[in-house]
Length: 225
Ligand code: ACO
Ligand code: ZN
Image (cartoon, rainbow, N blue to C red; front, side):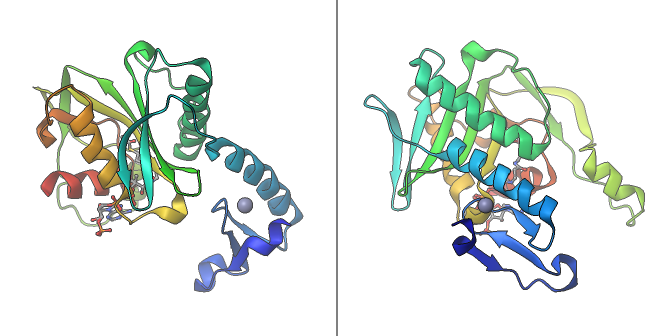
């Protein structure tokens, strides 16, 4: 049944013989039994995780042509909190975060972007913060072999001078097959508008924590526009 949903990717040498699953986005080699087994496991867990059945009292904070945004707060019913935790686990897995403890679970706001097909295709976790350290732009050093390693370890240079900020974005994630459609952009817009009652936060008042390379590219672009 899984195999109806596949398409072969034509990406040249790098992914030779690779398949990308249209439902879970995993890239794997069909010829390898281990890969296939891994895919089946990931596929089920992922689809179960992003499945959104909907709640009677869900808090819809925005509606779009391609979906809506739902906000989950710490005092919400157990089933909503459970969903927020499950999705956070999927996201942390993909980001390679291991058991990161949230600094203050009673203050976090979880935003979902739910598609018209009732799947959670975007997630943003925001926390109230008091200060942040600006990420400094990379100096123009020639490409060195170390650069990859640096990127991998997210060793961004940060300013040592704290700046006041109100909203910390501790995670932002969009389903791999739905990226570059402005979903992250719209999620941040909605957070700026709903995080603090009655005000629209400026880009200086929001901060992205520990950005990945994708996160940094997105944040740089977002904060310029
Ligand atoms: N490379 C270059 N520019 C990018 C990228 C990228 N990978 N992603 C976004 N941008 C820029 C583009 O200018 C884009 O506009 P364009 O498509 O018109 O050129 C603009 O940002 C807006 O992008 P969106 O479509 O709103 O972003 P998207 O919905 O694709 O989500 C995200 C971006 C969340 C970073 C996504 O790539 C993702 O989930 N990546 C994996 C998880 C991850 O690394 N998350 C960030 C972790 S850091 C943190 O959580 C604080
Ligand atoms: Zn799959």
